[in-house]
Amino acid sequence: MNKYIAELIGTFALVFCGTGAIIINDVSDGAVTHVGVAITFGLIVMAMIYAIGNVSGAHINPAVTLGFRISGKMDSKDFIPYIIAQFIGAFLASGILWFLFPTSNTMGETLPAGSIQQTFILETILTYFLMFVIINVATGSKETGMFAGLAIGGVVLLEAMFAGPITGASMNPARSIAPAVFAGNLEHLWAYIVAPILGSILAIISWKAVHK
View 1 (spheres, rainbow, N blue to C red):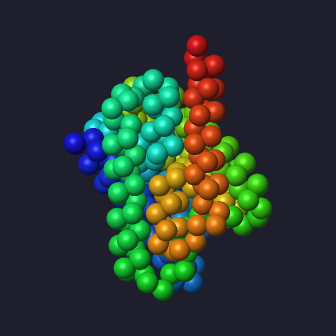
View 2 (tube, rainbow, N blue to C red):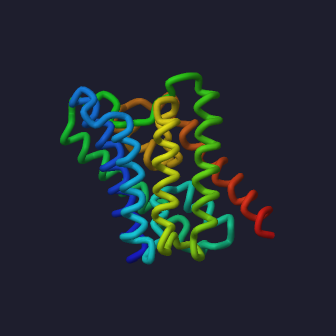
């Protein structure tokens, strides 16, 4: 159970801090800024990797867990419990944020600024880069080591920095689903579920091509 509890806590931290930064930026008239939101996401991912990477691998993302599973680096018996733990953590975080900021209309959800096709392609590529870096710096199914947190957190920060204004730079179905449910807006949610899954699969195909 320790691995599943770690994933729950890690995903809770990601959604609470990341979407919390978006909500607080909205209610404070931009005090956090877009750059601040991107840095928040990058830092919390990095922190969780160093905190729980040696326990669960700090996947904190169903798309990443899927990538590890199809790569053969993860035991099949852990797959579903990891996903469940991640969604519990995400919904707990969004629930608390909904209680703290009931006037928020978006709850920090990811919304397309342009067309849904544009968002779908961008989210697929963003997740591709993220998963490609993760699978290359991970040890087994665990994101551990001196520089894994820096590398992965840096990619999250980078992608949130330049793509956030267009797609929200989710790369994570749990991070998108929980806020969308509490905000009551599921219209474009499918893209934030399918695109990260596709991007993760493509990254594993590329990883196998590069290393084998």
